[in-house]
Image (tube, rainbow, N blue to C red; front, side, top):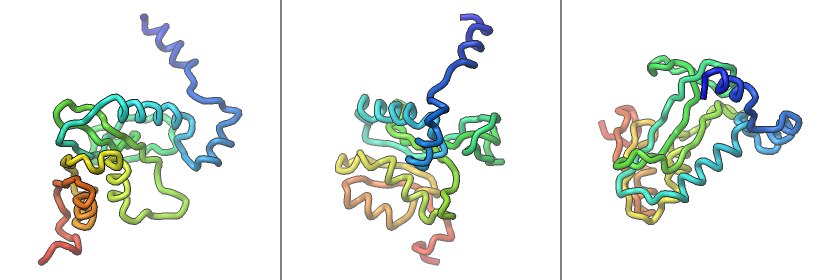
Length: 169
């Protein structure tokens, strides 16, 4: 396919109906409403199509993106400083995406407490009782949540921030 043909198709490609977008956005409360259904279908296919190995990891991925988007984020430490942040649970052996979640920005209620715990819980919820090991960085790791995962037959390996209250001096 030629580039001009690809560009023409890309310009005309739409994933949602603009006439019902606002109604669906207020019903779901998601800023990602124009692509939410397609993204959920992708995630459901990832979950149902693959049996992950014993070792999985959870981390964030920045999809570089500079166009207009209501949930675009700026992270100066990333190579592509502007983009869409996606949290993903990935199988360590094959790099297959097990589950994913798009960060759509702050909610209307304000700052979310224990966001890392909530995200990790959402991403590995379907793995409970499977005796798998989850590896994560200091954003997701906490002693309390490690104990919760252990009760659900999952183990957690991760770094901890030095200023966490559960770490002794």
